[in-house]
Length: 335
Image (cartoon, rainbow, N blue to C red):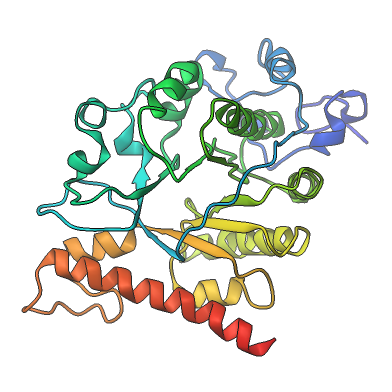
């Protein structure tokens, strides 16, 4: 292989097997302001040492125990205005942790999840880590203490952190962040926490690694995020790229692997994504809550004057659960 855009000989690099060359990196435009840059690249001091310290670019997964979850997992980001009942809820990491990620937020440690969110009953709780990078970096640095704090709560499932894999970042940064996510997943399992690995990726090499580990280690439940993918303009191409990658993964792992999705809630999109493949999915859905705070029904975008926001929230949850179940029922009928 010839020299890369950073003028290094890829063929002589110890990470070539996992890297396969450059990403769409902004290296040619780099201003060499390394003190203000958080990315790992071959020109940054000790970058290779950082990657070696986490075990290199290969990933390794422990098996996990699948969790029975409904198709619709409503995320409740804020305290409800009145007490409500739920069977299962999603907890947004951005609110559950301090902004620097080094601790669980005081309100949750003091009151617990039920009282902090004003929920009437004990629920099955699913924690997601789709949060800002600075929160994840603080969590990484103080993660042993945070594991201890997490064990103070009852969890149905905890999705491992989704460290950013930006397409314009150096490939070394991709490998480092993907590896860190898998390290935390394995450490959580060792700590007795019900962890689920988040599949972060950039190219087919990454997806092949994930598929290999899922198959060989018999991982029974995974998470996959479309969280940073928009739907209009240039973002539409990004969505197509993510959808194609997700389909590729589904076609290379066992059909009984259960999947938690984030960042895509549209029934029509989900119908297309799961057409002809695994339908054992759950969706982390914050749209039902957001629509209700605006006084709107998710199914029609109408604002019924006879319903308050919390009633609309419950109706929105019912709508999404029914639509998601319909996708799988239709698939079963075609068999």
